[in-house]
Image (cartoon, rainbow, N blue to C red; front, side, top):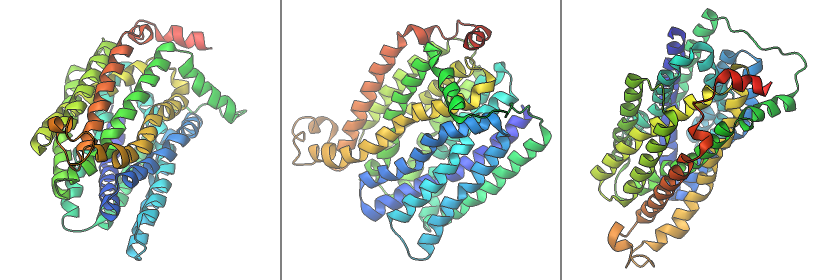
Length: 429
């Protein structure tokens, strides 16, 4: 557990830096253009290369030193940030340098994520998975918990360049922690003989499709990512419609306290059974609170619903993580997580691709003062800038509840905890 904690601290620091950059980029693009569509494009470019290249990263993570993969991915992702910084510093401001820079950074993150996921399995016993999953989520979610508040404060006195410098500096810390663990732990490396990329790729897919429970759960997570992508992308333009950057940063950080609350509860309880049932209940809660966020027009009420939303979300992630991790053999974990990443996060890609345009050209116009819904639905949830986005969140949250209810009765997911892992592994050979 000690070695895991060292890596975790490094990833926590890196996540805070990355979250500050993501927050600053969304603000920078929105203030430069006033377009929710371009904000969603920025988010798309920050995720799409990582998602598409995750299977490659997963294959490499199963065949090479996973810690070395993490060091390479973490270090070279800073190149994209450096490109953005130099562009702004040399007065080549605009969205194009930002788009190029975040794309470069995203490409190298594809080497990091599958290796990091698989390393958790290397270092821990099965009994520690749930607790470790909670800690992993705390590190990952620190970009929502801490980063917006810090970035909001910094942006109130300076600009995005300071954020980029801080983020680049965090990479040195994380690389140092990974290198320290790499020297102290011996990892058995898989056989590299007769390497065949397509065979490795096929084995990664097979580790998912051969188990109906895993494949059903991956499908469900893809839908979850799609709906959560709406709130990730549209929160900035919705809040900036009636508040400033500092208020937005503070609000997002306070709201994300819910993630800390949820993960602390998970860490204390160390959930050992009923993962599928808890998964469905918490997923319904996530949908309900997302819909309520869309109905609110006051900052304090949005914050309350966001806290509840983020409190429920870690239960979804942890239960899904444990169910999948215990059903897949360790020797294909890297490939499996690489494929799971691309299959689930394609939901984010779809959301980023459509939600900005839907907000700018469909839902926002409908709920303006003279919009077609102003006299009907507008009387209930309000009219004006940001209210169309609110309606989108209401719809997304409601559909998420329906999906949770449907998948909750799926036999393959409900029975995932009943099968013995050894029987599963033997059946795949």
